[in-house]
Image (cartoon, rainbow, N blue to C red; front, side, top):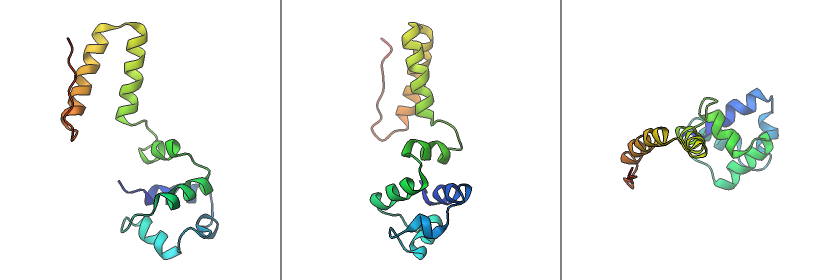
Length: 114
């Protein structure tokens, strides 16, 4: 995942100057390479950028995902709703969806319906 372009978009939307964003965390050339996806940055620098932008990591992920919850968040919300409602047919559908996600995961985890 490329993190830099979203950081740049947030910075521009909030009208924060590059100087104010970077402070002493990284050089403008390092930032440019980060935004262009040519390099990564340290976790500490990334967190500092988020703090300067006044954006939580969850907010960042939401913005980075096109202002939508991730597939996993959506599935989790549906699952908790179905569990609270004791909706067995909906739970079976969700288990099938989870299995489809699991098949594409490196661990190849699968859930059983019975």
